[in-house]
Image 1 (cartoon, one colour):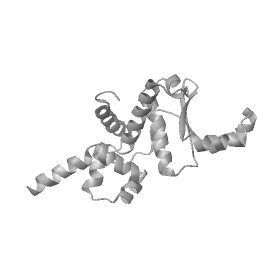
Image 2 (tube, rainbow, N blue to C red; image 1 turned 135 degrees about the vertical axis):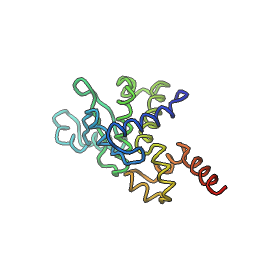
Image 3 (tube, rainbow, N blue to C red; image 1 turned 90 degrees about the horizontal axis):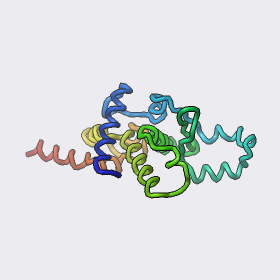
Image 4 (cartoon, rainbow, N blue to C red; image 1 turned 90 degrees about the vertical axis):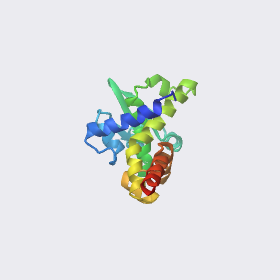
Length: 188
């Protein structure tokens, strides 16, 4: 990721929430996020009835479900998101937020769906992964979790994400450090 991207992602996550009428520390549903710019989403299970029509076997669909969590595809003048709806809901939130991040960051479709792992595609995937997590739990939300003394499980349920995502975002956003300093200053 380029220098300054993490700060940019934090700002974008708060701005998206503001535009959607969600407080900076509030819960953002990835599926609502996709509705905001009009990105259609479709679970893999909805592809099953049409799969035979396109020559896709049940075995190929099962392999897709095991290997792929989500992807952007061309759709009319824009894009659509396909996601693995057999995954747990918290994972679906992460997957859809990740794919929506590609769209929000205006990543070229050719660079993210070519299948070739290049330095450019790795950088774009890293950016989308970071922004996806940031959209789901930006710094203000991570600080809220810590200030409220929420358990990992309670925070995960509150935000509709995994406990691993809560832990990751509280650490990588700097929220734990900031919260610790605030507590020390309040005691001092």
